[in-house]
Length: 310
Image 1 (cartoon, helix red, strand yellow):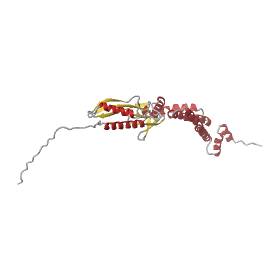
Image 2 (cartoon, helix red, strand yellow; image 1 turned 90 degrees about the vertical axis):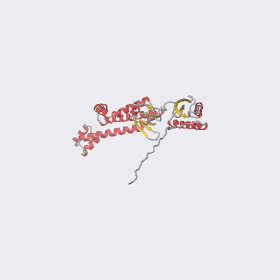
Image 3 (cartoon, one colour; image 1 turned 90 degrees about the horizontal axis):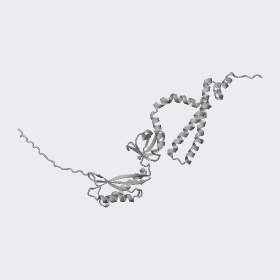
Image 4 (tube, one colour; image 1 turned 45 degrees about the vertical axis):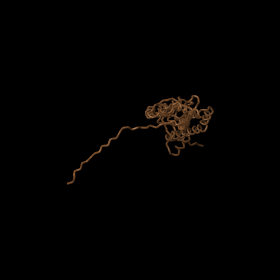
């Protein structure tokens, strides 16, 4: 009994084509080199898909539960989950490299990084700048998700909805969504009125020069003390700050607890309305600018002397 040996099959096995590469070569679709490459690519794809599936269905949910048990807010959980997803992907690529026979992943990555670092750095200066700014936002915490912030000298304002490593998304009070590069929020002055547990508000009431300043001051303080959302400690106060062309400016200063944009607008509106109503009841005037024109008008009569017709 004689056994026939296929030299092509023996050569394919010796060169590590595997069953996929051998099948491709036997069907005549590809030569030896193409079969080996196709087999390696297919093994790479299968490995990375399998690891990513396990990571998404098992590893990441476990990490999320662990973060929830620690009571972390969205501001802290989002970057940690992002890094976890990146870690799963990195691990999958590293294992897939070895499974596909591409060699050591770290050595390959070192060569690729060295070759592309300069090009990527030049092409992605803004992206890298925003990424670094995002890291500073996460570490310094100048604001959190849900905070009301203002920047660019108050030209932009809104409530923070999401913070990523490149951009921050802010919902304006007109319900517009602003996607702001992180560098714009770290390179300039940023205002966060709700960072502390209380916020001081100021409003100037203008009264007439003939009105009683002491009585107007009592009304302004009394209405602040009556409002349920205005704090008693620190107590509200009033200062004469302006002597305008047509009015005397009395600046009211009062504090609200646990501030938000909605509380700020509502409380100030209710308070100013109450003071205006008391002023009307007690005859205290809130004057508006008046301009008086003085002088005379002189009219000149122009006479025309006509010549009689001939």
